[in-house]
Length: 78
Image (cartoon, rainbow, N blue to C red; front, side, top):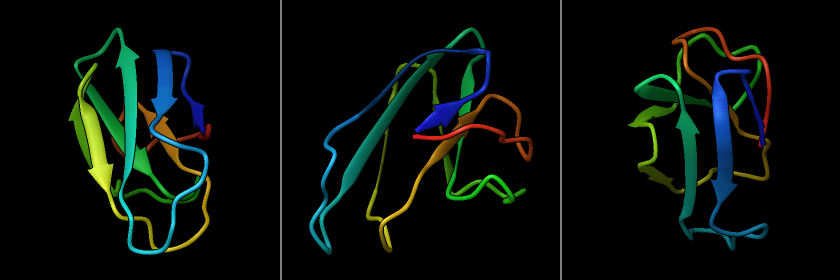
C-alpha cells in the first residue's frame, strides 16, 4: 500500500484475503478525505473515506491499492 506525502498513517486489516472476503483499509491524513485507487494510472477512485475512518470493500483480485488526499492524483500504494 502506497500513499501521498499528506498521509500520516496507513493500515490494512490483513495481508491475505480469500475470494469473496472483505478488506478494510484505513489512512490518517492532514486532509479530511482519503481517496482509494486500484492503480496508479486510475483517475477515478474506487472509493473514499474520511481521515481515520475505515474503507471497506471486496477486492476483485490480488492487487496493490493506492491512497491519496487529492481526487484523481494517486501516486503511491498499499
